[in-house]
Structures are given as C-alpha cells and as structure tokens.
Length: 294
Ligand SMILES: [Zn+2]
Image (cartoon, rainbow, N blue to C red; front, side):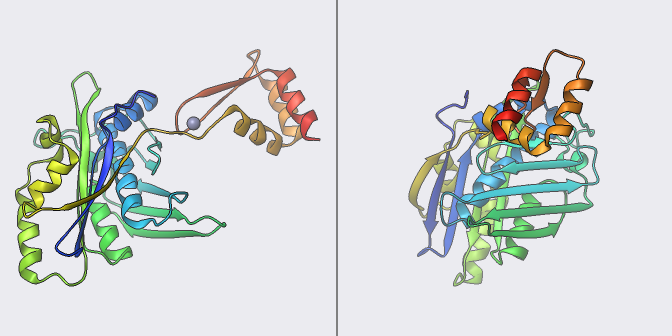
C-alpha cells in the first residue's frame, strides 16, 4: 500500500442539516489505480473520478459499513467500461484509450463516450442488492453522478471531482466534493450555494495549492459547516490466493485438466482484474486443490 495518510473523506452539514456535504482527497488511491492498471491520462481521470464517486456516494447513501457500493460505467467511447467499488479498487476496459484533449483539459467524456449508462449497485448484505441506473449525460462522470443522485436518489446534488495528471503519467492530485441539497431549503439559499459552486476553482487546483477537504467545503459554505467524522480512504483489493483456489475448484476437474494440458508454461497464471496481482499455480498445486475439494 503506497497511499499517503492525507487521503481521507470528511462529512459535514450546514443550514440545520438541510445541506449535507462530503469532500475527499484521494490522491494516493488514484495514484495506486494508475500504477496498477498502467492507465493513460484521460483513462486515469475517468477511473479516478469513478473511484472517488464510489467513495463519496458510499458515504452519502449507505447506512452500514459492511455494505459495498459499485459504480459501473459503460459508454460508447474507446475505454468501453469503467468499474469502481467504494474500497478504492477498480478496473477499465482499455487502459490506454485516448481522446484529444479539449481546451487543455483531459477529455474524459471522449474516452468514456456520451451514449451509454451509469449503474450504481449497493450490496445491502443478506443477498439483497439495490441497483439504480441512468443514461450518461456527458461521460465526464461528475455530471453523470449528479444526474444519478437527482434522478435515482431524488436528492439534488452538486458533484465536483477531478484528477490532475503530470506529463510522466503519474497523478499529482485527485479529490473533490459532493454537496446534497435536502428538503426545506429556500430558493435564495439554493441560489447562493449554486453561485458559490459555480465560482469555485477546480478541486484539483485547490488541492494543488494545499487545500484540505475541509477547506474545499469552506469555500462553498463560508458561513460554516459543522464537520463530522473523517475517515481514511485507501486502495484495497480483497483478492487472495485462497479466493482463486475456490475459483479453480468451481471450474470442475475436466476444465482444470484441460487447462493443465494446454498450458505452455510450467505454471498457470491467474490475474485479478481489479488490482493486476498475478497468482501462479503449478499442475501439482492445481491437482492438490481439486483433491482437497473432493
Ligand atoms: Zn485483486
């Protein structure tokens, strides 16, 4: 784990809890995602925004910690698919997809596409899942998430998330915010919040100046937020050799024998799509796994 300790998510409320807000610095998480998936800049931004969206939405909509939230974006752009879960892991269809930059900015909508959908799955435990889905608005992820919040969760929200990628492809800063407008706000109050959000510099500009997640929210709401818990966020993949052993068992003896016979290397390599960790199994090990499962 190379995530830096300044990676965390903070919760806040304002105006008698009629405004709820969440802000995040996830620079270390997105750095780790870029390194593991070897993504090129526009894909790094798309994957990073989706991963931060999962973390922010999870904080905003889930009630218990053991639940897992997943965002799955499938568009008609060259990256094809982006999936991220709220523990900071993710996968992409094509890590080297490219779209020409627009106005000097990474063209996230260009790699994601504008036709397609964004689906949010909340695993509520006890085999119960909730799934909400919206069409893509722009493929820029932030706007698409705001549309999802308004349409599927019936909560008007502003989402500002960004990833700043350096010329050597590494990630300098990644972070952003989610502001939810709850019932009971006056039109004037909503107008004032919208104006401040419109005037806010890009979140990565603030982070690069050294702003903390709390300071980003204070720019939106100078009257003062009441800050709640802050929680560290980090990249985490729950994969393990044992999980892949179970997967080998589930293939069945005939399929495993076929794989052993056709394998040209002295071992079979299985790679986790979420973290690119490779696990190696020799024919003897595969046979032992099958024997043990009998
Ligand atoms: Zn993994």
